Length: 115
Length: 149
Image 1 (cartoon, rainbow over the protein chains, first blue to last red):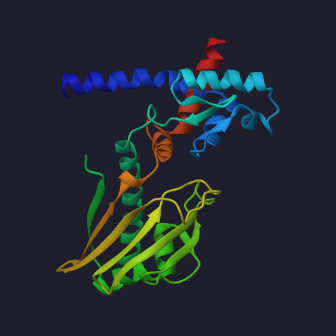
Image 2: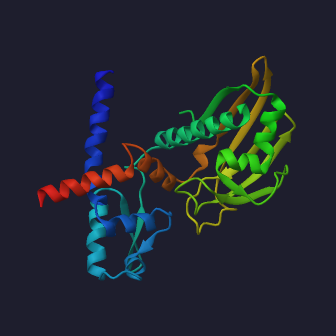
Image 3: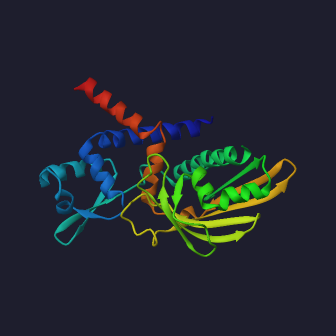
């Protein structure tokens, strides 16, 4: 493995550490799950249906924002939060994932037709 | 970047058998892990529910493109995991199965293309699957927090 490649992996790992830390909380994880649908949400929308106060939700959103998982944009009087998948994974990872799923599916197909 | 998946697999079964496993909706559902509402018809929508463990809430929605007997079967499908999404409007990728008779049986070539059309939020799923899995990471964090607090 080249030095360049190794250092890139190390950098990626370093970049991911704060992401894992930010997601190591049930509230934040549920906020990310909601936002990962792609729709931007205001703090009021995210607070609705939650037992937590608006301040508590805001605090959690700021942690996610610092980790780069979500970003906010002002719209009128309110900030709207949006999921930002970029620090998490690139399209390469998604292709690898789908590729693995196909390997598994094709081996099930093989078992079915060769029996 | 090559936004395409291609796989070739040799199957020790006649082309007619492989064709049935691909295009009979019950047989397809068995190995693909989806419960389909009805048979595949070229040009028509195919609906169903995934049976893949962990994805049972995900709807299957594909449009059958080509059915050239014992040669080519293709469909477009979406990748959305959001049960509330309007899946008929979601962007899709194209899946193609090409069959070729060989001495040992059938050479099957699978390709999937069009990943550049997909929304970025899908990549979260890939992230969950990588680095030893999401559950594993959550446990690590839990242990770490328990030790340090």
